Image (cartoon, rainbow, N blue to C red; front, side, top):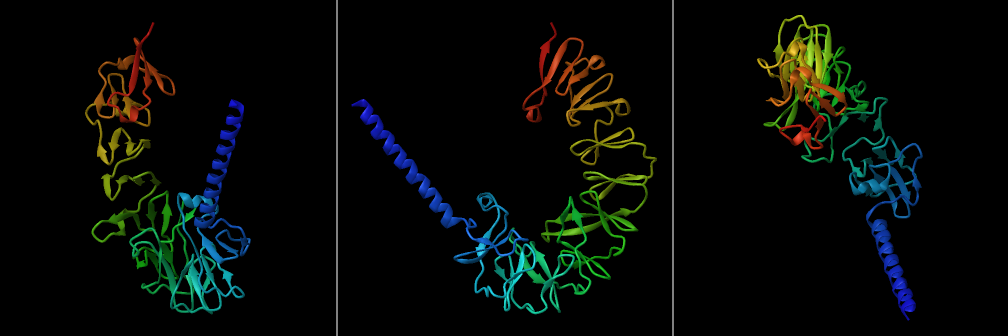
Length: 349
């Protein structure tokens, strides 16, 4: 009797699980545009065709839409003349789309994507504008800065990714469709966030009043140069953000030792300000744990806090997260980033 009941309940459970699985599958089928047809063009991953029509999907794998991305069906498509121009632009005989959004007032016949990736027609350069839309969704608009149609090009790449806010033509450089006064021929990105031309060092800074990014001229260009994170060596000067924090010295050492923390010769800076200036022998100091632990022959510091219980003269690292002095073994705590004291301490046997 018990075996029959067990089989009965097992069968019911199987049926319920099957129904749940079917519901999930149907939900995904209806909500997500899982490609069940084929790519319109095998060279591009964004435009697909199925029995409902042609749709655009911004991610290469549709299940990624659960976390990010967008999709949508294109309206009034003439499939016989539909052409994909790149992963985000397409057109037919009478329409132009950016993703799945129709772009109005475009000269269809001359609209194309040039060799640099810029969208143009015979009269306009089209800007992908995230700022005017007030959201993460881009807004497409013709340039209002007089960018030359024939020579417009993207030219700035950060970590291998094209930065569409930057454009240039034969005469000028443009930032978010605003003409700049930089030297067109020599202007370039250096490092991740810094820019130079033959005359100056620049940095882009967000303007909270205008809610736009401004290109700031920081210092006259010197040599040698070395870009860092927030810091920039400019000849005999050192820049932090938009300020020159060190001027006219012979720089022998320019080294990042932690987040926001740099060594310049025998000076230590944190977020552009002198750090442990009168407490640490910076010239002979050793740094551990992403620069948060600093030691000399007399002191051990964790950030700004002096760790008086540690014998600095004998303190040394014995493995990645383990240290010792003459009496104790010190192990970096699991949550040391949030702690005022970074170690678990154990007396030597």
